[in-house]
Length: 461
Ligand code: AMP
Image (cartoon, rainbow, N blue to C red; front, side, top):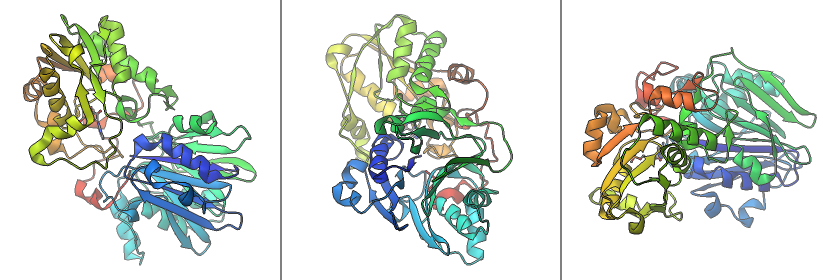
């Protein structure tokens, strides 16, 4: 998964992008980058591995002058974490320069790349996104939005893209609307496009609307021009964005993430009460809102029983296999004064491999909890995501080969219950239709890649 942010018509656009990327850091921590186009039409790029706060200071921002810029935070699904794979991509072509920032996963990237390579194309990264740059450069269309439409013909899967060609900003969202993309305006009218509205808030932009599925926006000196590419398709917004990925202070897909998570928690409390429990707490931070919803309906008091260390980036030294729980212990600690002697409900947003949950349960018991009941505000994750969420292979997904009872035994809880698929889809804004829930249901909107390893060369985000 990744975060993307672009602005045009603002003095010192790169500084706004820089701020926006701070708010999109949760969508990707492996690398960050900004490309800006200066008054002479030259494009300048700065990219760094790691966090925005670590890699971008005054020295990196100084060369990025100009009134148009795009930026990216990267969380690769499979491509390696190298500076070559940091975005935005910046390439020269016969018409000048193209730079591109992409969020999502192109499911037929392997085939598209082979076609291009057979025709002599040379790739400088292992990202699926680079395929789009080649296709943009090859288009013979005059209008930039038509170039974009050409480039996106036959591209399958999930993508939100921002492109700079000269000083024109283009934005596009795939026809199923898998990933969120919002359009906003700075107080002086400059258009801003961002993965989530929390990134509009930080720069003081007002949310205007979502970029529509299948829509291309061309943003130039004359304003915003909308056109469409490809056929209209049934909406397949990623429900996991509401469950876990997006920030609760964002609105995505036209709905509030906070409201969605509270509603998931309320539904969970109705479907899976925990009679006799004394209190409820969340696995911070992604489960906070769902646990509040659970507390509201169950009448249990909401406690802060787990403390999360906020200074842990993704760069901390990975513990060895021998110290599996060390990773959990570095990230969380339990509050004995809250837990001792209590029968507790821990609300989590999802269980993927089960290793976090297992470590947390051991920690909560060690802090004196009498009974531990886990309630999960989404159904069991039984399949990988091919559309941009970094879920592991099926073999690593605990719910792919264990039923709920088996998982409860493995993680060592007194009881475990998940929200049902219907419950989840009924709880999120504008549900139950129009969502992709493949990782929970196995109902993939596109044929899964015949050989998922084909995606290995690609990053997607
Ligand atoms: P585990 O079951 O140990 O794999 O960890 C599951 C926890 O990781 C959940 O509580 C989520 O909050 C979080 N999580 C879920 N999906 C992802 C993801 N794609 N990337 C990172 N963390 C995730």
